[in-house]
Image (cartoon, chains in turn brown, yellow):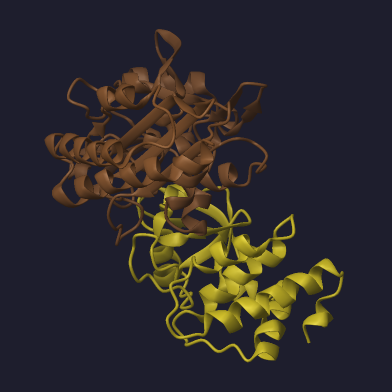
Length: 280
Length: 161
C-alpha cells in the first residue's frame, strides 16, 4: 500500500466529512489485519488512511439491562476484560481466539467485523448473538442487523464511504455456546473460518439454536436449525449424525474448503451432543 | 511524514513513511537491537514494546500511529523498578532465556506486574504466550511470574527473593 494522505479526525463527524471527500479512504482502527492479511489487497495504488484512533466516542463501552454497546474501536483485550458475570459467550470465546494478548491490545472489534476480504473471527459469534451495527455515513446513522453485512452469496458486504461506529450485543444469556477455529492460523489471526453456536432450552426442549461458520462466506443453514428447534433433549444419535452431514454439505457448497467444512460438521455434531446434559 | 513521539522518556522526531513498521524504525533508526522483527505478523512476539503503557507487537504498528504517543522498548524498561522485580524473580527461579527472546519475555512479564488489577492465572498464561519462546521452561517462567505477582500484591517485591 502506498499512502498519500493520513487524516486523523477527532470526531465521527470529521471522519465522515473526510470520507465524503475521499470515499476510497481506508478506515484504520487497530490495523492488525491491514498490516498483515489485507495489506496485499491494496497493491501499489495510492491510498488515503483514516486514522480512527483519536475518536474518543468509538472507544466507549455502554451497558444496559439488555445490551452491551461496544464502540467500534474497543480493543479485543478490553472485551476480554469485561466482568465474567456479563453474559458474552460466544463473543468472549471468539475474541480470545484472535492472536495473542499483545495483538488483542491493538485489534479492535470494529476492525474484526468490518474486514472486507473475509469474515474474521468475531463475526460468526456476533451473527450468532444477533448483534446490531450502527453504520454512519454522510446521510446519517442507522442501526441494522449484522446480517445486512452479508450479501446474497454469503460474502462480506460493507457499504462504501461509511463507518461502523457501534456494535450492540444482546446480553440475554445462552444456555450453551461454543466457538472454534476451523483450521490453523499459522500467521496471525486469519483462520480459514470460525464456527460459532448457541442454544437456549425450555423444559428440556431446544427453543433457540444458532449454528454458523464464517470464513470467505457465511454459512448458516436455517432449515437445519429449524429442524432441531422444538426437539426434546437428548437428541437421538440419528439427529446428531444428520446434522453433521447437513452442516458439512452446506459448508462445502459455500466453498468453505474441504478441511474447514469437515471440521464444521464435526463441531456442529459435537455441540449438539454436548447440549444433551446442559439442557436437562 | 514527520513522526513526533516519546521514546524511552525522550522526545524524538523523524521523517518516516506512514506505514513503516515501528519495529523497523526502532531497530534501524534508533539502533535498538533488543527488538527482533521475526515474523512481521504479530505471531512471534519478539518485537513487543509498551505503546502508551500497553504491550503491543511493534511489527503491527505503523509509524503514523505512534505520533504523540509514548513508546518504551526493552532498553527503556531496563531502568524501571518493574524490570528489577522481574529480573529478581527469574534469577531466583533459575529461569534462563536465549538472547533472542529474553527482552520480549521480560517485557511481557513486566506488563503483568504493572497491570492495574492483580493478574490471575489465565492472565499470566495468556500474556506470556505472547512470546513464542522455545528456549525456556514454561513451568519455571510462569512460576517465577506468579511469585513476583504475589510479592507485588503483598506490597513488596522482595518476597520474590
